[in-house]
Length: 319
Length: 213
Image: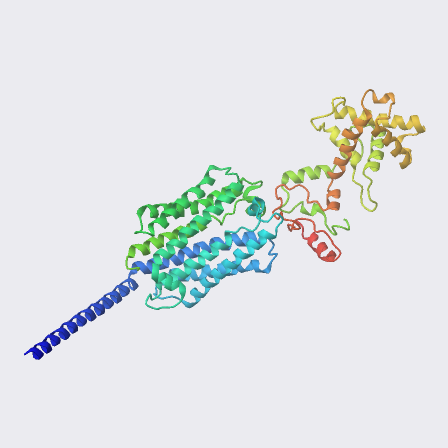
């Protein structure tokens, strides 16, 4: 009896183990299927597509600011270095592909768009390097005088930001199941919404710092000059804060306010041009000498990107 | 116009975007100043003309800048600096008296009118005036050295350099009204600034200067 009983005990144990394994297998399979369903759900989520296209649009606005600002400033610099033509070409291309991406409702990334955004990132990075070099070779190197009147350090970063946001737009509309480059991995790990929020939030803080420096140069002679050093940093900080949880209505509100400020800034700077001798009739002088008219819309582009990030966070399947 | 800024003529900016109506009006007025005296007497004017050509000698080969006429015009229109040395009379009084006194010094020393003297003799008298070593009664209490530095030198130099011909010679762009300058860095040039000719770019500088507007 004893050996037979032992055998049946063993059989029972094996059976129990098999059942357990089957259960686990079913569980894993089920979860995978549910995950795939979630991915498909996100992929087909019209909200995700809308956010991606908005991101393309925001990138286009930012690139337009870069194009016009660098065109004016590099014309002033008489294109002393042939490389000074590069940001004009690259930002023009970025505007083109961003408009394409904004209109394009097909899911999936686009090769030319992706390449152009990559070129924008590289140009922005190299531009920042050139600007640092320009600053350091001036007599006095890192003095306030050179920070005020030398090549602006923050300006090329706007092109880098445009490239990053555009790439994020492409990755957002891309099939997340495809494994690949680093950016996508990071995007998969922390979520595209968070990634875009991080980039645009930090971008807002940096742009605000540059506006602060140049408005300090202008001695804040108009009280409105305090607006871009108060509203966008709050928007940026709130955006960064909402990355920890879900997109809050407060950050949405402040980002909309920042976007409005970016538009209003065009008007304020146009007013500043008018205040110079000869006003707009003397535009040849005053567009160069007065406040840069195309600079404030960079706030518009960045806050639109921030809003797109909040949209992505709200989708919830973006994990 | 000059070797250093070949082909540069500041008056080319007259109808360009650099100057506005007010700037054109002021410069036109300067260019239209009559060459004969209207405020000073003929002999005072001759003396002033002779002094001016010692203080700001002019190159041959171009129409001279009418320094004496510019000062005469200024006196006629009653333009003043708005300040003067305590011992000095107003411009309209100081100039005729100083000119008469300098002429009187010349007649006392050489028996000739100031403007007929040789350059060296004119300089000798001007040096005495500058040093305050002039005691003719024609000064009537006005300190000669103060007249020399505060009136004579400054007014002549200002009149000379107020003329577009002098601006073209030194490559100055004229009044920045309304268009000023936007390329402020070292060795940077706005397209409406005079281009300086160096050993290697004379032709390019001439071409650039022809485009100045």
